[in-house]
Structures are given as structure tokens and as C-alpha cells.
Image (tube, rainbow, N blue to C red; front, side, top):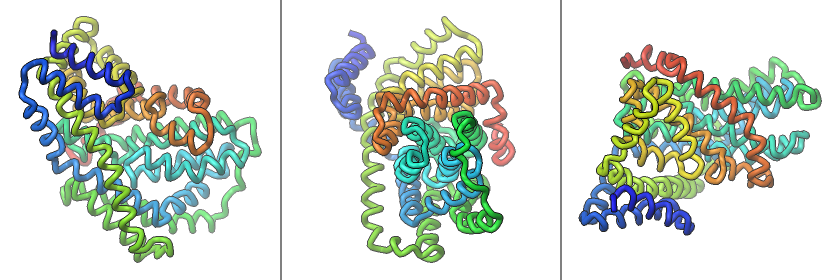
Length: 430
């Protein structure tokens, strides 16, 4: 039997028997290697090579930086700034939800962390203020996906590490698309609240806006420091993640001096970051041999030939890539998809001359939609649990948000300069 068939049948068979995805990938890879007479040392070597990457070290440090910022009440200061800026607009709390997600995205890089950190504050507040519970959950889950687009982004770090693409260029390429996604979600929030004047807060005083800006100025400096350091060549993305941790510690201990932020909190934050990263790394370890087997068995070549036989235009192939990612994103995490299917995506992109940075940003954007679509939809699951709303009810409320998200994706595909002009201007990429 063809090795690729064995791999796919064994993988989906294990998944149907409710074996966790990470274990299913590892076991199906071992079954396939055994059926082909390959040494299991091949599997072990790919696992080691998958995690033996300097770039991957950035992931736990950015996670830790986000947790430090959250523990140090930075989220509260970003929330206060967002309320001062957009809380008075009709649908104010929904706009605040989106804006604070955009600001927090520049700190955490993790949509799941965004959902749990911000959702635990804003979902109950929105429901109490009169917003429908499903909409409150939907806007929280959808806006948190911006955390994977606006730098620093963990998904972009993984894409750059495994795809040999500049992480700094990916970071810069995500700025405009992330802002466009946020603005489109604010538009949906405005349409939701336009006939409900009670959902607008009082106009802020000049003094309140000034105070909010001063309170949030220091944390807002972190993404500027990170991007400035990377683009100027002062440090790499991995070194930038360590700088982010140090910056967060300085804010917590010496600038804000929050009484709840002490040395006693550090072991808990470190263990939380390690556990969170270990889960992702375990998935990477098991995905690496599966991705290698797919490439070894000419999976990318076969899929490229199929797509080439059906579609040959730039936009046709891009549409196929988006559809493939949407389907995969419903039941696999972005980490797994990037590790396993990146060679396939890059082969399709090379076929029609898609810029590697552009493909990376679009891939991360589409994978963000997968985080709010069942059954995987980790952001939707977290927000639904916070709001005590059934997942499918919350999903129905996200459909309009997914629709405008796809419009932004399509716009960025049709106008590549929206993604590429900042990396070209600051990093001189072709």
C-alpha cells in the first residue's frame, strides 16, 4: 500500500477513535515508517531536528513576557486607554474589546492568552451592560485572533523558523492586516449597536484621556522596542523575546510597582509559561516526522500537480490555499498546520510566484479564523466557557465577524502591498 495512504488512514483512524491529535501524528508516523521498512531512527531524528531551532526559543519568552505584563496589571491600563478612546462610541464596550485586543496583541503574541486574559474581564462586563451573551463571546473570541497577526506573533515565529522566512519581515507584514481586521470588527460592533443608544458610554474628559495615555505609554513602548530592534539589526527575534521579558519585569517591579507583582509570583509565571510552551512543543515534536514523511512521499509534488491541473492562475491557486487552510483550521491547531503543511503551501506559492512573506502573513491570518470555528476553535471554546454560552450559539454570532475577516484576507491578496510595503520600506526585502 502507498505510504501516503497508510499515513493518512492511520492518522484519521486514530483521530476518529479520539486519540489526541499530537499522539495521532506520532503514532501514524511510526506505523507508516514501519510499513515502509524505514528505521524508527528517522522518526527520532526528525523529532530532534524539529525542536533544535534557535528561533523557537522566542516562543516561550514571548509567552512569559505576556504573562508578566498581565500579572503586572498592564492589561488594566490598556483597557483604561481603550475605554477612554472608544468607550463613548455606540457599542462602546465591543469597540473597547477589539481595541484592547489590538494593543495586547503587541505584547502577548498569543490569541489564546488574549482570550483568557481580556475575556475574563470584558465578557462579564459586556453581558452586565446589556449586550447579548453570544455576541459578547463572539466579539471577544474574534478580536483575540488579532494577537496572531499583529507582532509579535507566535504563529509567525513558527512559520519563519520552519519556512526559512524572515521573522522580522513577517512581523512588519502583519501590522496593516491586523489593523484592518480590527477595524472591520469594530464596524460589525457598530452595526450591532446602532439602534441601541444605551450601549454607548459617556464622553471622556480630556484629563481622563491624558491620564490613560500616560498610564499605558510604557507597555505600548514594548512592540516599538521589539520591532525597532529587529528591523535595525540590533537583535534577532529570539533575542527580542528576552528583551521583552526584561522590559516587562522592569515595568512590574520599578515603574508600576504593583503590590500583587512580587518575586513570589515568578515561579508560578515561569511554570505556567513552561507548561503552555511544552504543549505546543509536544505537538511540534510529533508533527515533524509526519511532515517529513509527507515530503518524502512527494505529497507536495502530488498536490501541486493536482492544483496545477485544475487551476493555473495566481488568484485561483491562492483561493485553493485559503480553502485548504480553512478546512485544516477547523480541526488542527495553527502550530500543527504550519509544521506539517508548510512545504505544501510553499510549493503551491512557488508555482505561481507568491511572495514568501505575503504567503506567510495570509497563512497566519486564515489560521486565525480556524481558532474561532468548531470543533477546534480554541479561542471560541475559551470565550464560550467564560460567558457560559453553548459553543454553537456563540459560533452563529461569529459568522458576520468571520465574513468581514475573509473580506480583509481577500483584500490583502488582491493588494499585496498592504502586507509588503512596510517590510520593503524598513527591511529592504524584494
